[in-house]
Amino acid sequence: YTLLKDIYRQQHDYLDKTVKISGWVRTIRSSKSFGFIEINDGSFFKNIQIVFDESLSNFEEVSKYPISSALSIEGTLVETPNAKQPFEIKAEKIELEGVSSQDYPLQKKRHSMEYLRTIAHLRPRSNTFSAVFRVRSLAAYAIHKFFQERGFVYVHTPIITGSDAEGAGEMFRVSTLDLLNVPKTEGGKVDFTEDFFGKETNLTVSGQLEAESYALAFRNVYTFGPTFRAENSNTARHAAEFWMIEPEIAFADLKDDMELAEDMLKYIIEYVLENAPEEMEFFNSFIDKGLIERLTNIVNSDFGSITYTEAIELLEKVKDRFEYPVEWGCDLQTEHERYLTEEVFKKPVFVINYPKDIKAFYMRLNDDNKTVAAMDLLVPGIGEIIGGSQREERLEILEKRMEEMDLDKREYWWYLELRKYGGTKHAGFGLGFERAIMYLTGMSNIRDVIPFPRTVNSAEF
Ligand code: 4AD
Ligand code: MG
Image 1 (cartoon, helix red, strand yellow):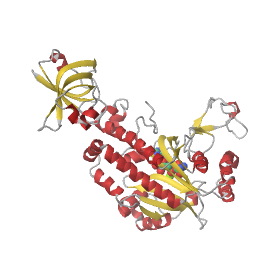
Image 2 (cartoon, helix red, strand yellow):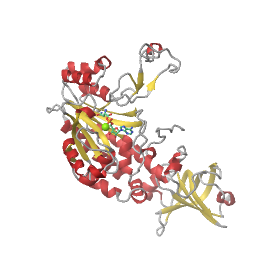
Image 3 (cartoon, rainbow, N blue to C red):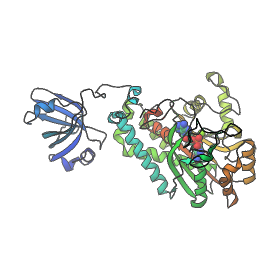
Image 4 (cartoon, rainbow, N blue to C red):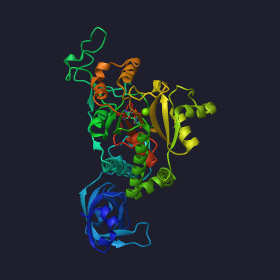
């Protein structure tokens, strides 16, 4: 078969020649003596129009094929200078590969995103989701390309883990025990000695701690894998299962970390604009007007940067407009983040040096003893898409911090040893892949940028 991707990209090789394609009917209309089929073969975002007429021996049947039937078609590719599409295929032979039922749920009319979520197994056949998941695939490739070109080593960190990388206790437990009927110890805790691993294990919330261990051997590394959070956040930007990209760089500080994050994000945007022009044009017209211009501006300008303390001062001046209170020491809510990036900076902005008490144990303590060398990257329309920091490399300070935060040092013994054997300054960050895709496509709900979303009360597929 000839693929639509090749017909569109190298049309001169195919014009006025016989091509044989296969694909699924998107629309079909016919009159007594001729008809049109729009077909998509999966290899390209756009459809191609097939013209057929009575010269086909099976004209009557073809006219009645339901939408989404799978066909193979032989015909001549001809130019159509006055039509919307640059060319079409004049069919000489149409064969049925797999018929569709008349009750196919994705008819031509527009459906709501909510409805499409209920048919997550069919939605990749719609224009919107075809564009989203092509861009998702390309963005994943761009990320690997970015890091590999810079010599970063890709590390596969474990999915099942005994340590809580964020120390936040938001983990899904992995167990082979029947947790409802298992003996409890004195303190009411489940006795895991009979479990597969003989200890409590969980699905990873982040590969960072293991990535740090590899950065202290390979210097520059990154992870790219699924992560899991049992946080009860029913929002448009939280999922229980999401993918994260976590670079970790040795002999590097917070400034190096921010530079890397900015370079990476610009690289992904440029790659997608260049390699998915049809999809991006679609988002720009139907999902988020002005998207392409906005993304182009981002590539061509510097990200902003502000300290947490300065950000709080700005927010306090307009505190009446927020639902949540603002004062030094509070965590920034989405409404605060969006105000900073959408109204103050109007572009991506790093907020740095957060109070230590609202950040994870591993972040490096600043000289003021109150803040840590943290950075969050906020972007318009979403808020936080990256969270990162310089890591605490000083063993005594790290241990003291863990004690303050009531973390069991024995659980993190190997992480602490990294500080003992040539621990050096290092930094890293995590990019939420779905949030990056939302940003690239203008899609407004995380459920619509991951094929089978796992969010509160949704695991049907
Ligand atoms: O800010 P977070 O929690 O940082 C970490 O996990 C660090 N260990 C990263 C590092 O320094 N290596 O998460 C990083 C990013 C967030 O900025 C957000 O984009 C995304 O991961 N994220 C989520 N995305 C979707 N659903 C959720 N529930 C998410 N939680 C975090
Ligand atoms: Mg964060």
